[in-house]
Amino acid sequence: MDLNLIWFLLLGALLAGYAILDGFDLGVGILHPLARTDHERRVGINAIGPLWDGNEVWLVTFGGALFAAFPEVYSGVFSGFYTAFMLLLFALIFRAVSLEFRGKVDSPSWKRVWDVGFFGGSLLATLLFGVAVGNAMRGIALDEVGRYHGGIIPMLNPYALLVGLMTVAMFAMHGSIYLFLKSEGEFQQRLKGWMWHTWGVFLVLYVLTTMYTLIEIDRVAADFSHMPWAAAVVLVNVLAVANIPRAVYAGRHGQAFLSSCLTILCLVVLFGLALFPNLVVSSGSPEHSLTIYNAASSEKTLTIMFIIACMGMPFVLAYTAVIYWTFRGKVKLGEHSY
Image (cartoon, rainbow, N blue to C red; front, side):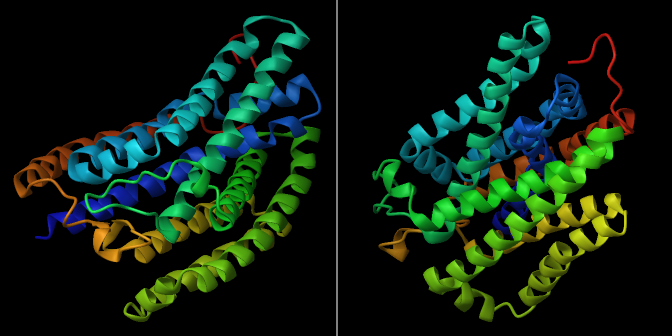
């Protein structure tokens, strides 16, 4: 049993789960300034209020699993991207604080400050996630011990920023469909326009990013040539993207949301296939790349962790299922709502 490969797949599953579940949370925050009234803003916040913290457990679990399974990657990436990670933590924390503090004082100016915090934290976190993915695809300059010393400025290259913008558009689209399912009345009708516009922007950026990837990153086409079955993932991805407007037009918004989830899942799978067997690609010297084999913990550690994961993951999945079932249906604002 190849435990290194298994942990690579488990990390991919955790990343996909986080992107799908917290993706619509972040998307609702990105769309927050488009709400016209305080009532609409409260509907958006309460649509994710019972769920957002549970969704972020997937990110925390991903970080913990990366630390234990591939410590060389964890130490090298976190030390090299210290500023970027501090910005990400600030964005996620400020976003959470904004959700909790917004309704504590019944004052328009007070609420406006936290509305800006909710939007800014969601936008910045999403953009940073996308930039991280872009740089992982492009590769970074690693030394012989797998450390990066370039700072944050080289990370803000055109390709990484394009991937970041595509991620923002994708999560905004994902969030608009989710918000439509959770709302009703006039606000829900206006969300139809949000879904069409965000899908259109995502489609343009998706096509541009795909073209840029094939031009900028030669190894992607080469890697996929050794995995012809990966074409099936690409086909499913394209069909999922195309099915979103079809489902919205037909009034099948639940199907549109599932297609949005499948779009994100396929992109995470393609991201993993493009990296494999690397976890961090060295752009200058390929031999310095951190792989699932040279950056892994001992086999005993991976075995113990695998046993713990098999015991713990069912609880995470059960908790997620119970929470989503409990808070299903339309948002109803009450005395104790956000």
